[in-house]
Image 1: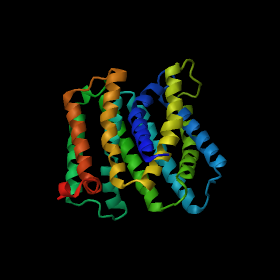
Image 2: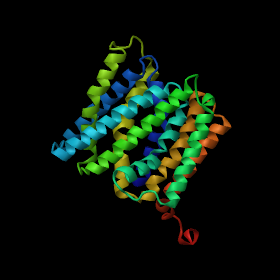
Image 3: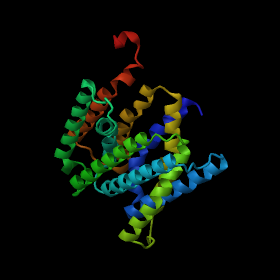
Length: 297
């Protein structure tokens, strides 16, 4: 696949995923929506590794990686789906934009990496300032439970970031699609158990919009999006890949406004802008490498 096409597809998938998460919960509830999504993603990933004869490594390091990814996926997605009921869909993408900042802090504490140089600290502080502004205007970020929803999303980002650092510490080199399948194999029983606890009965009436959103997330959000993202990491400069996390929050906010009539107040936009600016500063070294030499100085 041409890199430009893969890059565009990843941006579109990541920008539309938050809105699809909100739509997928209509009629069936958030636990059913996330369980159905993961079931589709698991079935597809297992089918692909079988057709392409990739195999599913089961050595000790691979199993630890599946466990770390599966637990992280379960915790992060359950919090995300619950919180998505109460906040504007675009804010899901904005808050997940904090992942590189949070991962840098956790990597410093857990892996001993020197990830917090002065520029990265400045980016982290700007991200915190943007987050504080969004929380301060929580009543403008969604429904009456917007603040609990924001807390749930922030917890989701923390769990997801911790999972990434854990997987990095394990250092498994299995094929990305096999890692995706193994991760979903661990997470799927947990999602099924959560659904049984919350409801346990098939939903009586799920509208077509929700089924389409679930199918979209299962195929594109859970499998294709990650596969193409790993493909870009392998074949493209890190700075260009990093730009994806700067582009998607803005597009997600706009799509939520245009397609779901979500009114985003000016202070929420400002908070999102501060988070994006903080992320840009945090990743400046990789982004600057893309600039002409005369601009870099």
